[in-house]
Length: 396
Image (tube, rainbow, N blue to C red; front, top):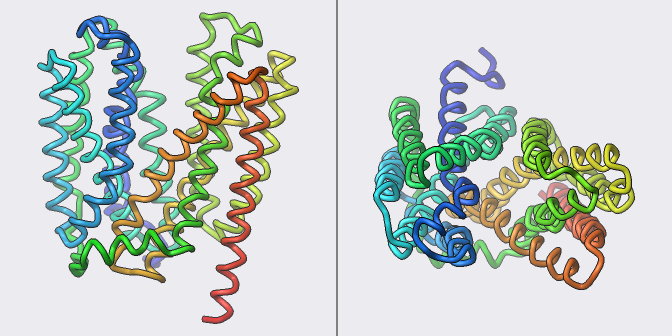
């Protein structure tokens, strides 16, 4: 067996980590589908129910790096099993929750658990695979989120429609139990990191190369979400029948599965070099919507291409952040692994806010130009990073 080949054990671990991210993704994203059920059940406004989404994202972004730094020396297997157990308890408590405040607190604690588990899954996927197959492994782990959006969220929303929003958390609790059992049998014992102070860990965030790498996925996701956030108004401006919109959004999610597969291919060789061109194509695709939406079929094809480009950056930038930490601050690799999910949340918030600013200024379709310009920004940042890598290789 060559050390570049994946064994049956490798594949079982990859599938276990993918199942885990699917479960975490379903729990995180399903809240959007059941928001109106929650607001009417708890007698609160839709806007107030929306804080369950924003509070989750903010808590995820702030707490994940802090907890990852504080627990970097923990046994990964034991820590992950404990967190999955806690995830199950938190989701079970949501089943019986009948108070907005309690639900908000439960979701915020779930956000911390989710952020840390995702980061740990990335580290395990990165460190246990043959070097040549790390990209493939990480693309599978990210694929769990894609499947959560395509399969998990619609199932959770359907259950809420048939029963109640509390019943959706029965689903996520059961999913959690399945993920725990799979993880118990498949997660390996891994060498613990040496203990280092949080101050030493967080000094990683002041390193210019890490900051540059952090903003690559931020801008990449920002470019997509400047447009994606307003996809439904764009579809309505194209005179898409209302009954078609959910089907079109499902198609968009389905195509992103292939985006994830391509992400693994890109990460297999010279990923940062290749990403320069990915962002250039993304800029072309996003700005193209300005014209193609004049024709319904052409507009849908362009939206399909937009989905195909959307998450090609994930695997490469995840591994890049871990590898850069390995060069500049090896004891902070756990913290580095948490930066990609944080960067994506920063990018989503930035992109949707920027798109909203432009949308409210006048022409809705100007969001496509904004998305394209942000993608060019990501391209330039990636090109700079690639140039510095080559320079570092020469001096090394």
